[in-house]
Image (cartoon, rainbow, N blue to C red; front, top):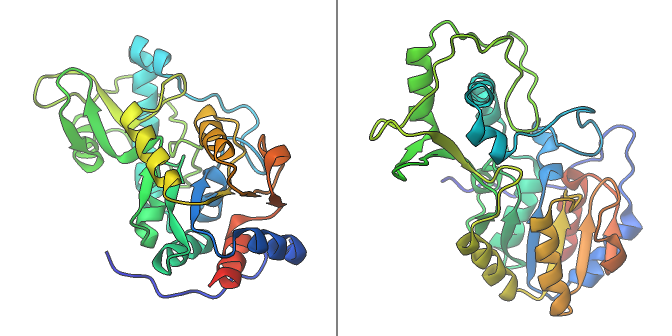
Length: 289
């Protein structure tokens, strides 16, 4: 992977004011410490990937649960058809200033790595190497019968072959899962495992599913190697994020929260910054470099 060049802090978006005093205070909390970073959907919204909650989130979006996915052929057809239509747009999203700032923090030794709730792979594409993808990744697909692992590209090719009638909308509007809403799923042929014909599922943690224990231990190990926690772009509504916060609290680690809106951890935070991660993280990186 090529190494991105260092970037100057991004200018605030039109209508936004970078809260300089809050950023300075957060930097004072973090300075001289090795930082673990926990990120959520808010860091990827500037890359065109919407979030379930917060500014600009869909008002009535109902996420797919693992129970529904496993129990219903129609639900799986809807999931795979919509996911296929949005997949290329989702994977074409590029890392933004927030992702690049975190890469710079890792490169210079300020950060010990990133624990992310996102499945878009943008931290890795920005150059970060110590990344725990807590909720999995859209890059791979699993067979639930035999355990075979496939690339998403291979599954996409199978969907194209068996569903040549399925055409992408002219103007793609992504949902938070990286899918779009298909006009119809009538006649859609589900992809299957080419080894055993078993059911396929993206290698992501659905709503109603637990983070695999081994993966959570990796996140705990990353946190244990650091002595401060920075939360960026997460409302912390999902329990996996709160579990990381609880581990940090048990050790008495300083906690800094950067998010546009209030979070479940604000009352425990040593410092909070209300702002876009694409604005605040580059400013923090400059303070700490």
